[in-house]
Length: 130
Image (cartoon, rainbow, N blue to C red; front, top):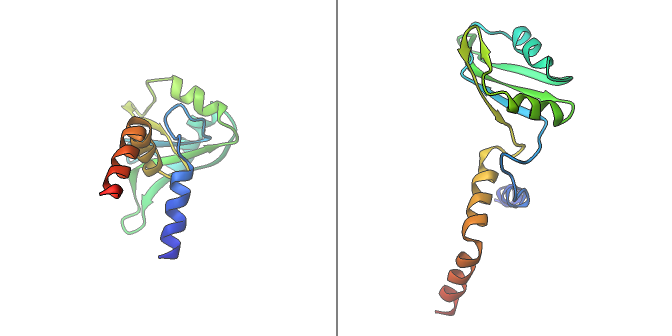
């Protein structure tokens, strides 16, 4: 595992990932299966210029997997999207989250560090002394 080590290092490097961090990409879940890329993109283009947008499809069945991603040119449109609570496609409310470059792992590990950083450090030292 040299590669695994590298990846782990990168993850801890992105320590402070939380929902207040500014990113230019969002995750959209709970999409109705009939929503396609074009409709998806047009909806989110109202908030700002889009670099990339995609609805995820299952290649085997060619059916929508019910979620997608939108990448904007800057974090500003993401802030606007997140401020609105009631996004919906075809009458179905969708879930929108910021999409962090490292996925959910970094935010989870940073939560642990923030919460018990000092106590955890002390515990480790005691164990080593024994």
